[in-house]
Length: 275
Length: 333
Image 1: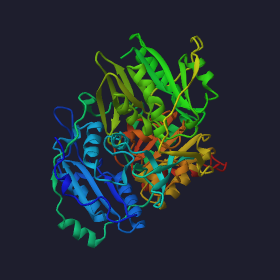
Image 2: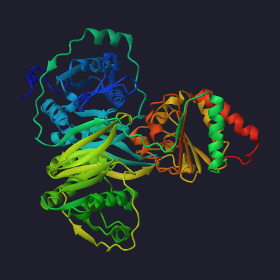
Image 3: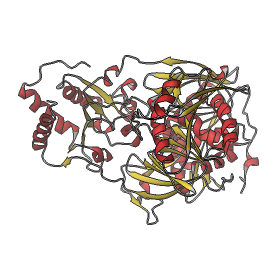
Image 4: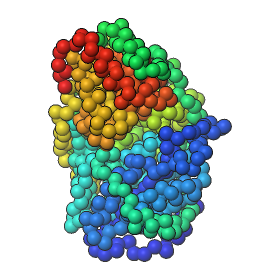
């Protein structure tokens, strides 16, 4: 399978010095929502369609892309997501934040895609479209693998930085300087030429709320479903089984009135000589 | 494919992390009974100063790829250095650290070297044609078992395996191997220190009071500070989510991309218990979560769990303790 419709898009650069930016977003099941594990043990299933929302880490990526675009007039931000029809809602959220264009790569059982398969689909889509920057969140809230971004960079031959906490763009040199967060006290600094791929750490910015005019535009905007290209290598990894984690609790769970729980906690802290 | 397991030495510039020792422990647990050899691979502009100690204590032979271009880290240079090595050595399994370094280079390194890749595992076992990896996903609510075909690269969560010093082990060797490096696109620069003061008391604290998203807002932080104030050697920490909400500074973050703590008492307030947070606090001696959601995964590792709202429980508890007049010392932090 190859991507169709690649040729229907215009020239890569809107004008000199403007940037073409792609943000990869994932739709995830809200962890607060009611869920079941599918009978074959391979999937998390949420019955209510409202249980799905955009991966919060990707909202930071969208915001960073919008900030970058606003700094270089004429730049545009596009978003891409892989999944069944419902992921259009995540794309609409991105449009309502200010992205100009959304691409939906239609895969019904996307939860079973490995990170490598996802990366191959995105790389196949992005190849030849001359993006200057590709952003995504540092991880997904559901699988938390942090692998799709780095693998996409590898497939596209782009320099990569993950866990980005600060970013400045030098348009003249077509390069970016980033700070990567290593832990609470240390950051790596790198300069990368564009095009480059960055995964964005939460807290780098404050993702904006959608504006009314963008919400109206996003509602009306067509989001065509594209067929994915990019073949994954057979093998890789397979989800064998999802289960609820075992209860390894060593102690007790108190669920009674606050006053008696406070007494019991106090008693416990006495028993371990902390109070 | 050979019968070797390679550990990616986890080092920040020349400092070898505790995580490297955990990877050695994990490799040993897999190699046992399978007849597999274990080696470690590092890449820097020199042999890290504590390489000898690492090889001696873990019994693992360490190879360090050396090139001046590896002085400061970049994914590009690191992968360019390590990929040819693995393509030539054809390991059965490569183990990496699931942190801001390992997550950066490992997935791309796996692709380039033809290794299947699974990230963020907490347990790994060898089977006939594949490895079985186990990890916790979806904010700690679901356990996922994976089949990872051989040969594979797997990153392990911090704290997933614990290293114990073994005096009887045959010391490993350290070999420096000068390599050529193709010119890279990325220019790494010296790392910078940030917010050194904040959260500095966390590692020495006897009691850590930690905030999660469930704390709700800055108003409720006063309750947490009041609670911490009841204990003489206490500190306030928080989850990534709490830092993002501005409840706690990033320097006081506990978890995969923050600090790892093991106090005598860890009071987790409004914390659901994602794998990333648990990795930073699970070795605390006593764990007491306070959360209104009885299904919060953090309760699975609790010694005593309080199902209640922060704003209801803490005022009552704080009042009871201060009413006792038992504590007189001021908190340190």
